[in-house]
Image (cartoon, rainbow, N blue to C red; front, side):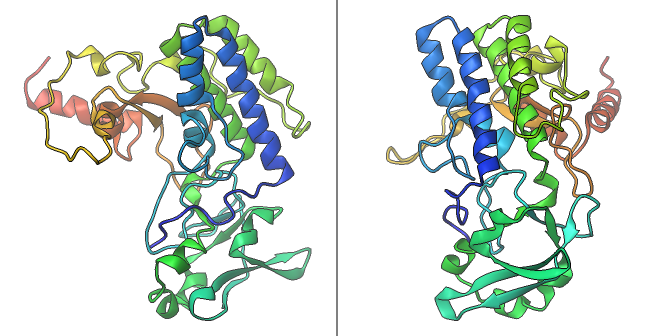
Length: 333
C-alpha cells in the first residue's frame, strides 16, 4: 500500500504557490488581531502555519487550516490515491463521467519491476499528450479517470508492492475535489471560526479584514471574492452546524463525559483527545459527492466530533429526521 508522501509533494505550480501564499496572508491577518502574544504563537502553530507543499508538509508541517481546507484527507491503501493533496489537483477518480472534468483517453504502465510508472494519456487541443504520475500536477485542466481505464491493468496492479503504490500516489477522489477559489474561501471561513470562537477576536472587525484580503486577490481577476455563498452571520460561522452550539463548548451543551483510562505504552503516540466528544473536526453540512463539488464556504464548517460522527454521510436534515424518530421512539420530549 502507499505508505509515504504524495508523489511530487514539494512541487507546486506558480498558481498553487500564490494560493497558499494568500492563505498565509489570511492567517497573518487573523494572528494580528489576537491580543495575547502566547495565543498568537498557539494559533500559528496549531492553525495558521503554512507549508508550500501539496500535502501540507510532513512532520511539523502546516497548521489545521491548510490541512483541512486546502488538502484532501490522508489515505493509504492498494490504490494510487494521494496521501493528502491539494483539492484543486487536476486529476480525479470517479465512478462515472463528470460535468466539471474532461475524461482521459487511457492509462498506460511504463517500466519494469520497481520502476513501473502510471502514465495518463489526455487529449489537449486534439493532440494526445502523456503525463507520468510525478507530472500530473502540471495538467492545465481537470481530468477524470473512470473504472474502464483501470480494468485493463488490474492483473498487474494487483501485484504492486508498497514502493510502487507510493511512487504513483498521484490522484484524488472526485468527491473531495473543488476549485481553488472554493478551497480558499473554505480556509477563510474556518479561520474566522477559530479566530472568534477560540481566541475571542471581534467578529465584525476580523470578518471585514479577511473578506478584504479575498476581495483583493490577484490570482484570477475574473473571479470575484468573496462569493455570493460566503456566509455573513457570526453564529453560522462559529457554531457547530448540527447542534448549533459553539464548537468551543460541549456538543449540545451536554455535561462532560468521563472517559475511562486505557492502557497504552509510554513510547507510543497519544491521540486519545481526538476521540473526545467535543474535539473539533471539519464537517460538511451536506455530504460530499462525486457528481458535484461541495467543498466550499457554504458547506464547510468546524464542529464537534460527536456531531460529525452522528451525521456519518448524511445531511443535516436527514440527521435531524433520524434523531427526531429516536426521540419519539423513546417517548422523550
